[in-house]
Length: 203
Image 1 (cartoon, rainbow, N blue to C red):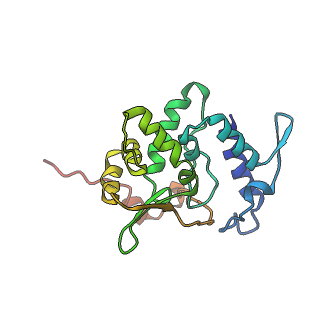
Image 2 (cartoon, rainbow, N blue to C red):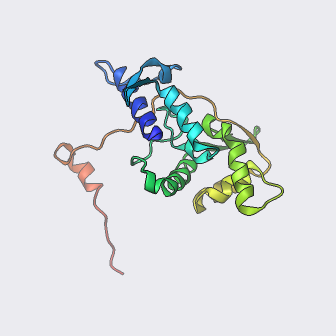
Image 3 (cartoon, helix red, strand yellow):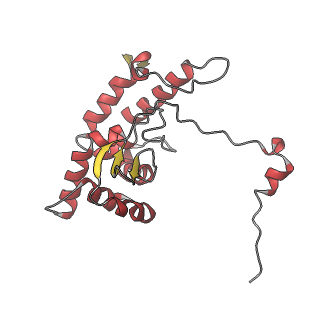
């Protein structure tokens, strides 16, 4: 409930800042404190809801990846609301999806070899490693090993190239994490409609 409330109030805060040109492209640093919302008779800010969600998580690092702050660099918004009876499975599913996002985990090759984690995941890395140790009994657990254990197959192939890389915070990006809405079929051009067709070749 606290997760859903946080995500909803962040979205509402962004919409409250919208002008004639739509939502702002850059979000203020104090977005989570800018507005207050009456929830169950009590005035709450997104910040207080975030704090409550983290406290109720009781060390479950996956919760850090479902609290969407609306920014490009950070956890994406999950497709569905979180339900009490399905919460464990939903958190696992959301964590796998989030870890596949380069705005959550990014591997920087070149001169500076870094494994960059978005701030929420970076702050929860100790809980991530503890969870990995609890599940595997590993005695030499690392952040990378824990990430490899949770990620899907394609992401594991990418992360394997980051062995020995320094674990750092992903650079902050306060641009709004927006997605272009789909174009209604009646407004699509003939060319874009052709792009929607799949050409099947006979065997």
